[in-house]
Image (cartoon, rainbow, N blue to C red; front, side, top):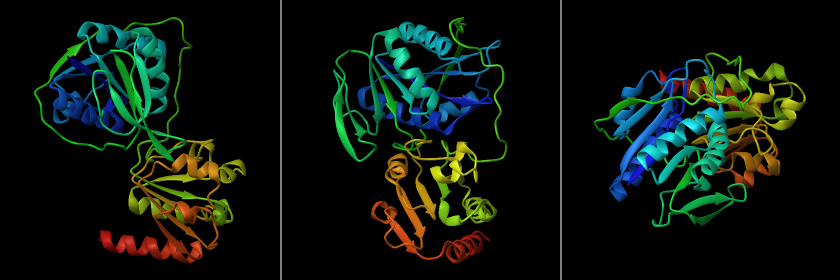
Length: 317
């Protein structure tokens, strides 16, 4: 029996989510005695995958199509699924993973289970723990088919190195004419992505204006964190919409989420509830965020944050 792990990459480098998928898949393979096979697109540093337990890896070069194309990706992966006769396919909960998973499941006639947060509790058929109700509860989902795609929630398993000898292969890219063609993608350089960040520092209307955002940026810089904001902040144009986190923005599943001057509307809390540790700094002791936070500081952000930043800088020296 075999497991197939879809390893995501960007600019030729394996993404952190890809390494987490490899770690998770390796644990299932060890538990069941399965072979672990990986597949990815345009990856340059494939050798790192040996450190995360892959035994065979298909590196697909797209050449004429350098961006994510769900039709082509799903067609290409489905060929490898059938060739390797994989019964469990693992994808991430990234934007690309959530787009790819359901389409791939139709093409390979498999079940699809999303929001997975743990290793399967049963096999034959697969049954696994998942989050639900915007991460406020958990349930057990069971596959009704022999083949299943599991979509792993970000930061729910972590990275676990395990060295294996890996066979590196190339496979055919199935170029589809059904999808729109992406001609260009603009990416910011030198910033930590919210999706990949272990730590996120977020600001709200309590910052009083965009001119005070240096408090968030300075703290994030010390922590090596991504910066984010609440919906009102992006709506007012203080910060770009790409930084808006919450149920109506980007979901966050970081190991540490620090909210500064964010009251904690229900939509915001729903989007960041998967974060493991939540810290809130707010001068309103009745702010809803305090009920959801693991740690809270009631105080003026303009006094608390600079002192916190200086303390963290001193510890790094």
